[in-house]
Image (cartoon, rainbow, N blue to C red; front, side, top):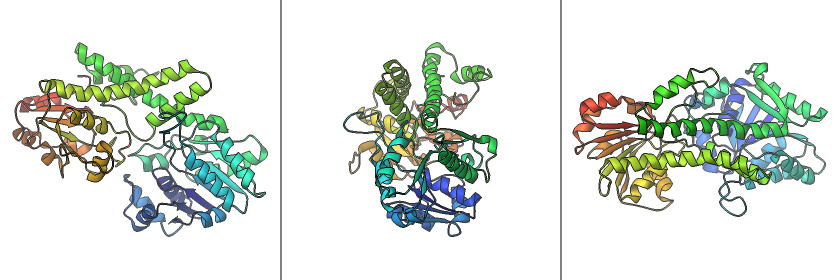
Length: 452
């Protein structure tokens, strides 16, 4: 069997590497138009950072895992084609700011139809709106010169930072397809691949539309929990309650559970906000404005939390940060990844710069040029924004330290050393609740946490 995956990003690369590792008899080729990205996958300096991914790729690359820019040739050779291209939020026209931009998905469908010379199974791996499979099948069937296609939905449920673990031991694998003999055969073929290492009871099969919608709903529910506890964090700060204690108490209820009840400066990443906005647009499109408004509130609460964190820094620094140095520790949207999409740090830095603060950022995995581009825009510069080589350089001479990403190294910094090098009073704002505030206060810090 030959598998071709179109798209060598956060989804396509790790997923195909794991399939190749677990099914050495299947030839797996990841293709992409971006030659530099393909070269990075081939040369070992992987374009994305995920713990454990290097080892998985090393074991399979060159054996049955390949990375190529030859899209046409690999489409022809493939029995199964995964589509793992980007589906960003539209920035123009109808649905701007909420609807998914499906131009890349449509382009891939047309490319498959152009080059396919034998029957194919097309697998949607990208996060897409409900009924996109119908559009893909219409395009390939209209242009396929008699070639037959089956379109399946197989959404990814990876969490960045734990993608390899999630792939190796998934909660579930979801496969949606048409309830026809051909569709059932295609579902069985894909289930058979995952069945090499995933227990069969964890492989769930549904119709196409249920599968497509389940991805959006899963992310919406997870984001909802974060926004819910973050809303309570503000109430905790106003009343003297401790949000971690509240979260622990309610999480003991088996009907609620403890996961995703960690208060923070706000969620980020490539999925949560994008998927909820897509969900709200779908709801409005189907004449459900009340449902759309409900989910829009989850995004609104998250945005408010980010601005609230920055506003608290300004307030505690005597209502002005003009010409004061603020160290921002962490820029990735979460630890153990170099992904900065929708990172809370972007909003925090922008809000502080708008108040004329001098912002020094440090992140162990995000390159300096990416930090500058995310905050200021590509090619833009601002002398007030700098990127430090380590946490101590970022904090030296700072009036305040803001922990925005929960990197493990920030838990074990020498805060006595940091305190000694700061103007007094020295403030620390923990946007992830990962450090011991009481211990920091003993050192002399004015230390603040989320919901404390």
